[in-house]
Amino acid sequence: MTNSLLEMRDLEVAFTLGKQDYPALQQMTFQIGEKETVGIVGESGCGKSLTSLSIMGLLPGTAKITKGEIRLDGKSLVTSSAQQWSGVRGKDITMIFQDPMTALNPLMPVGKQIAEMALLHLGVSRKEARQLALDMMAKVGLSRVDRLYGDYPHQLSGGMMQRIMIAMALICQPKLLIADEPTTALDVTIQAQILNLLRDMNHSTGTAMLFISHDLGVIREVCDRVIVMYAGYMVEEAPVEELLDHPRHPYTAGLLQSLPGADKRGRILYTIPGRVPPLTGRRTGCPFAGRCPSATAICAAEVPQMKKAGEQHLVRCHLVAG
Amino acid sequence: MKWKQLVRNKPFVIGASLIGLLLMLMVMSLFYTPYGPNEMNTAMRLAHPQPSHWWGTDNFGRDIFSRIVEGTQTAFLIGVSSVAIGLFFGLFIGAIAGYRGGWTDEVLMRLMDAKLAFPGILLAIMLVSVFGPGLGNTIVALGLMSIPAFARIARSGFIQYKEFNFVKAAVARGAGATRIIVHHILPNIASPIIVAASLRFSGSILAEAGLSYLGLGVQPPDPSWGRMLSEAQPFIVNAPWYVLITGSVITVMVLGFNLLGDGIRDVYDNKS
Image (cartoon, helix red, strand yellow):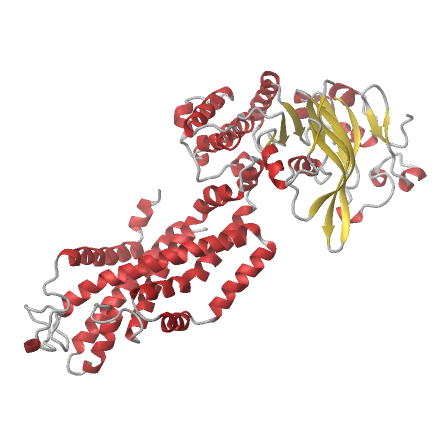
């Protein structure tokens, strides 16, 4: 790992429902190095998107950061005022959304939407912004960009729109790009193209990436390091090959076991019994204890701490010897 | 564009033709009317329609056709400017209330509700009687009257659209509130606003006719349809055409704008 670009330390995010606070993210501690690509996996509702939104400062109104620290380049984001944050948003940190069809303004030409980004953050003239946008569109693999510039989102395919989103995200040469399930809404061949593009852009521009997905195959394609999340906790963190080959946490192992594959043809896929406990029904102890095949008494009583299970390999489990 | 659909929509075509006709009359009246609108001819008082006076004359012997045609100017002026006032402030208030939400929304919208609680025409009468009758004050009163309607429509649009992904994406891009309101949300809620504006247009013209009928709107001798109607009233038996013609013209204008609005709504707000 090189110098750390983004540092999250003991972050806790809670939703306020009625008069009570329900923590949705707890003890989030991780780093993203310069030019590094870090993946976050986990099933729906485990806090992946909440993690990215808290980095962006875009938490919904009912949620707030109750504890901890997020630093970008050593500068704290948590204490930033709204105005400072909006200077960081879009300039230093940008985000690609899950569904490009809904993430573009239907009534604004796509090129103009890319140029808007440059206008907002680079202090360039309209004409320069247009030129930058055209260049960026070509860089993300779009052709006939002059004509495309004036097209509206409904005239484009899903893959083209996601390329537009990527162009928009990278035009200001951000330090960190957050990709929240960028390929989920696309079909498989387009998925592969978009992943390649993201990887290429990561190499050529040196933008670090936080890649959120529930698809371990996609994570393997793109990421250097992976964080596995469960019910608001990080449960395992390791370099991608290490994690996929030697999972230590029972949840990760379960996830990997439930992947389809050629050798499992004809057999019923494994599923982890139970489901993620809802926000309001989380109890003490290990978050995964209720579904864990090898849970013991201590698992229900105490939240395990992250411990080292190898070089660069962290796991949150009582059953793993430190 | 949905021009093709609009052209095939009957209410739109009928409404547009009626409004177009009145617009043409208005343009014509700027350069030419058969008689001066205030030109009296005491020899020809309350004349019935005939070749020299197509729609007859009033109790002062003034040519009704010339006065009606001249009155289109007042009608359009009042319609356009009061709708413009209503739109400007209504959108402004609605945008802030809808986009900010929370307390801002509560306070602004309760104010609008308070305003809606008064019957519009009553409010206009109150304003005009405080500030005095006349064209300018009538316009201001009618404009203020139409603010709440636009504010509510804008607010509901903003509430709906601020949750859309592309708006959130714009926030994530670092776009400020003004930029998001003006560039990203407003164009998307244009169609219900256009519909409301065209319906409001007829509402304003009707309200002006009402005010002028009561003697609070446009002052004599400037021709106004509403006041012509009230002047025609005593002669309803002797010169029924005076009332009928004036009333019909108001009806045509109002009907035209309503049909126009309905047509646009059919085409643009068709959710099915």
